[in-house]
Image (cartoon, rainbow, N blue to C red; front, side):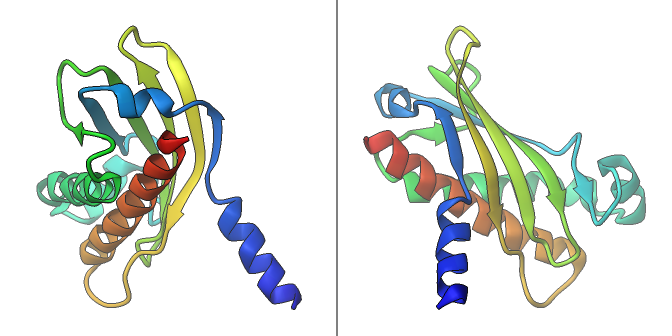
Length: 159
């Protein structure tokens, strides 16, 4: 019984919001930006990981694309996520860490058109993959984390 309660508690506490996300559903376009610059990837900085894993610079846009695609899919028609230069709102996802299995931990700030923070999302996390290269596990994690964020955004923007 204690294990069930702990599992439910950790799942419900996974994403905490300060502020409101209702303006996302009113926005014509919402820009989604993924930032790895402060991330610890396999215990290394992004630049150190790029030297270790030489395909990082080639695969990084693919990883960002997977993240965006899954988030967009989970948001459905409620929120128009994309990579827009002139958007009504912007979500900046800061990747905190990616472990060896491709598990992500992120935070995000949501900005209005004037650049004011209107919401903060903490503890965005998802599992990576099970098999494959380091970059394949990171890609799997990007898909899962994007899906988790998209589902959360859709659920919170409805209210």
